[in-house]
Length: 284
Length: 275
Image (cartoon, rainbow over all chains, first blue to last red):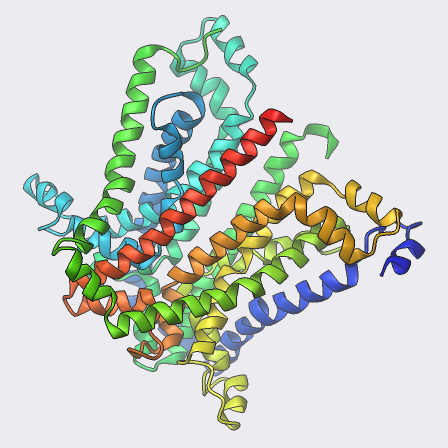
């Protein structure tokens, strides 16, 4: 191995292991990530275009798109505000319990989604700690789309906090000082000085939270009530079709979900690439 | 010297809002899990946990996690080494591809495995003729778990190895160290904490995966039921206390994961302060 590396030390590749690491990586990505996706296309090949279209535009399925996209959008917007607040407080202020609060931010990632699901359903049901007083003021969360949005917001909040936090940390003190010494108020300084630095990260984090919410399953199904046309999410539609052994139907809907999430992932990656390049100015 | 938002009133208001909201939104659910699990006393909790089917689910879940970790470890290290130590066409594509499991809905992940390796799939059908069944059995659970957890180790390692650069390894190799020695003596000490955290994250997700596993498992009690699936069945059977007993075990793993992260961050900060 070392002789091989030394022989090549004249080239840019001084280090050994290119072949081995490339082999493992490509083999793994092909077998684990890409090959299974071909199974989906194989299944879809058995459908005519008209059949495919009929499945993905069936009323109950379209209603599930609406519920999923609508709730995910609300959850992402709420998280954009809430996540920005949390990131700001965690970076800018010192207070007792700050380390604990910071650790708590990762809870939704660490907690299994099914656990989050039954817990939120129990808390926000009419008899639960939160549900009982929310019901008293006329707000029903469990078994409505509000509950779906809540579960989505819970599972995806770390995306916003953890994307915004490092950018906020890297912002030099001078930026603040300049704005404040020029007499800007907090509101103006935040809008005109902080936000222009922050919003690419905020958009990235919110976008990631949105994509995650679109695909979320375990945290939602317990609180959603799963009423056809009302509170059925698209991931559940796939699950329902599978239980009916309708593999073609499940695959058709899954292909829509897969396409949308991969397109969004690509868009976020391109957006992030651009944003990073802009931060490094002319060097890149 | 005043910074934006440093006025006492603004500060106090924002901190209060953040703490209150996180308390209601994040901490309360955590408290509720344990409150529900122990709502009928410790002995009921204990009898729920030591139930035969629960113990079987715990065993299966641990076995899946133990098998998943080494696979993700080898892949994560290899990929991180590849994309941070070499420049080649397609490097960025590889880095985008490993994010696929994060973007794909767990249910879709389960479905694509079921389609390929199920009895009607082209690989599954062929295996079936040799009487090998992967789906609705533990190998299927293992396969989808690997799918959903494979990015974690790589994602922890790549930024770190990128920041550290390859100078130390190049020096070692130039001085005649073999590739394996270089990795073990130079790279590994530099990345061990990130590696450990990657493993902890992989474990947390492997233990808790629900959507993908519920598609391929068949959820047969005492056979292919992992702990999250068992919890769902108990909950659907109106055995809320039993379900939350399982939930408390899983929440405990989540809490240990968070503690490990905080500990590792604290360590890194302290080393930076001394450096």
